[in-house]
Image (cartoon, rainbow, N blue to C red; front, side, top):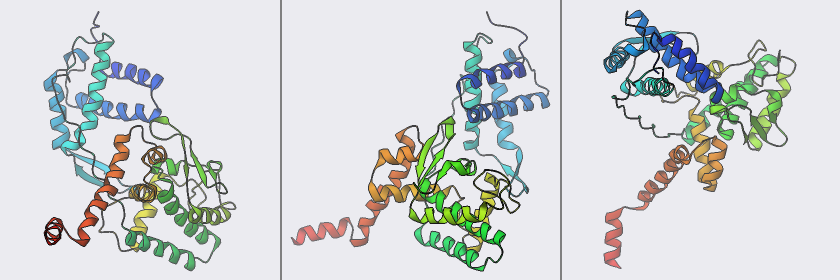
Length: 331
């Protein structure tokens, strides 16, 4: 029997408990953050809080609000700016609301799903675009300059740290949050392996790195030890944990010093770079999927498709269909 007098906030609390029992913490946060935004908007707009009064127009009004209202977002350096959402950015809200109300109907808290009549297309994934070799070289030239000009042990630690961060990001294909969450004991420098204890969807995995990164990590760890205040792998100038936002700021500075500030792409683009280089070298799609931590081959194909397309376009360097047709006629 459908319950009456059930509020959105009360339902959201139950939905959170349901997710927490079966899903990773990151997944719970993903859904609940978007749903809380919906509840807050409804309360601010003075709309009914009873869940059974939510209908299709209610949901449409929320989407209209998202598209036409600017949002204040904070950058890694704490600076705030105003941004406007696009239709692509509606998808996480639509996905969260669909799952939330679907669960409520299944559990007999509601007799109808107000999202059922709405159809949003899942946005296509943006094409993978790695850094070009000459751009990577520019960044490493900055890193080498930082090392050569460092004077104090603390300056040397920071220069060695930044070199190790970029090197490990390229060679291990880990995600930013995974990289920031590493502890010293997660990295086996001698074996050239690292353990991601909790990746996307709560899954752990092993990753590897080559001799260059091994040397870079060995150098950094030597300078890190006397300055560190904890066991996190990456530390700040003060010896405390360097979080994901701090790593983003390191890369932003490197881009600027390398003269690449006009090139679109964050440090996550290093993951794309390493993965495409790996596939180009050995063409092992299954191995690449494991190293990237992908649940399906569909995501991995974004990386392999880039390499295959580049190879196909490379044929044009020595001619094209018209050239080949004429050559065949001459034969």
